[in-house]
Length: 267
Image (tube, rainbow, N blue to C red; front, side, top):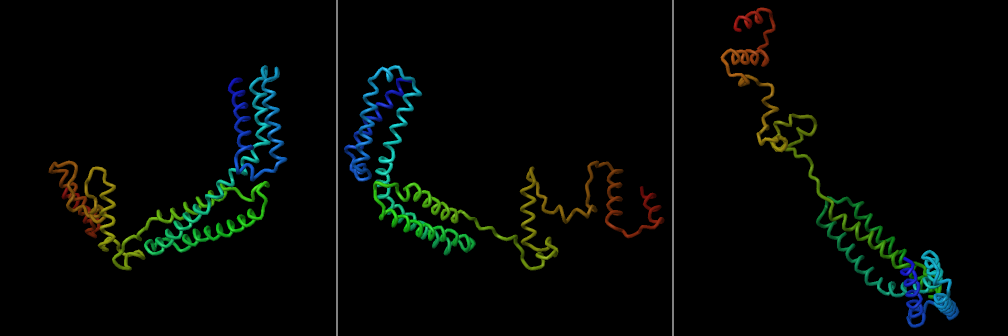
């Protein structure tokens, strides 16, 4: 662990010295005084590595030394990296804007079930981005390269990713067809079982619900009719009992005691 920390510190010294001295972008984003300050700190740290304190240092001390250099070096290297990244942004911005515009046009023409407010939301994201990007790039152009940037490339990429993701989301909105009706009769509490489309809808549903593959499509309509009932017991006595119960249930309309007596006699 100590040896690894010492190697990391030494490698950072050599790498940073090369960048500050030779990298064109590092030269552009730093003043002479800033580079001198960094180079002197790098040389002093390199000399310290050969002192007794460094040879006896633990990993924690070596890590602290590395962080002290990073505080000086990273602002210059970060600004240099931003110059490289900003140069790539215009092409990326155009590609994402083209994608969003093409997607919006496609959705409007071919996916009419997508609400207008959904498309407007994505269009507004694009408008907001264009306004923001025009403003920050204008401010950045007026700013000295040796100063902190007005925006970072990662900010632009995050906003573009949001635009692209929202546009893509529109293409995944599925069309939900309304429940089928042949006429207005079933829409307001009518006899939906007589509506052929609704009947088919429920027949399909019942078939899907049936785990053993049986067809339950006539279950509702046959529920109140037991006249053709075939019982669980096929004996002659039980068959006559079920038939008698079915006749009474299906509504002979005779609730008098006389009818009851006759029924008892049949049993």
